[in-house]
Amino acid sequence: MADTPTHRDPQWTHRLGFLVPSVNTVIERDLRLSLPTTVSAHIARMSIIRDTPEQLAALADSVPEAATMLSHAAVDSIVFACTSGSLYHGLGYDAEITERITAASGVPASTTSTAVVAALRSLGLSRVVLVTPYEPWLDELVVAFLGAHGIEVTATAGPALPDPLDTASVPPEEIAAAVGDPGAADGVFISCTAFRGLEAARVLRGRFGLPVVSSNEATCWEGLRLAGCAPETFPLDGYADLCR
Image 1 (cartoon, helix red, strand yellow):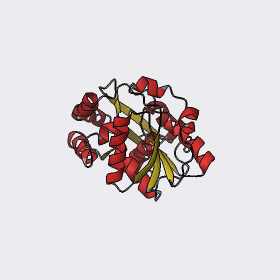
Image 2: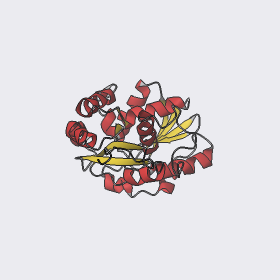
Image 3: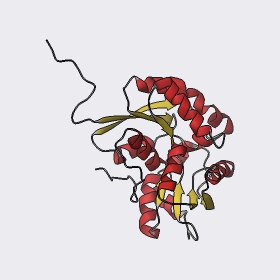
Image 4: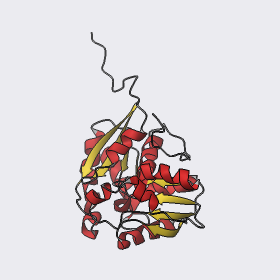
């Protein structure tokens, strides 16, 4: 009799699931840079082509079907990988999305905005410079969300681009250059999973010697943490090439 097939390969220890905005062209590359070779990333897309109030508000409607599809791949965790989309309706909205994911999939879940707050807190950061590609109205939502969690934004910077395809084209050096003098801030947060913040974070750590959290690094950490293969403290050096 043939051996009973298993879901595991000794060289492939964990599968992580990510719900990704359909227009995002950055996060998959960042996950390849960040995840250990023994961990695979599996993506389900949610329809959105522009950062408008209407499209961001509707993004979570894609969660039940997308999370169900990811559960078919026997993933160990699922993260809703969109910062603004997971905080759009304010405090507690990220928890609502997490509940939807787990209800549909039966898998431990989280969101990028949840992960960002956890990462900032784990590093002891309470005053941060916020770098985003967003227009001012969306920056304000991020500032309010962080403030509700006791994290003060001391300054905001970024190119104000409503089209995520434009967002993805901003070089990491330009993202890092948007941060002038961090002043009284004790760290930097680079928001948006469609922004090359992971690479910019490495530049900023070297330039200022301050902790930096990017959305994609926090998302990666959260997926690993939920799967039981990352520490409870966000790494000071982030995730770019950390596991390679």
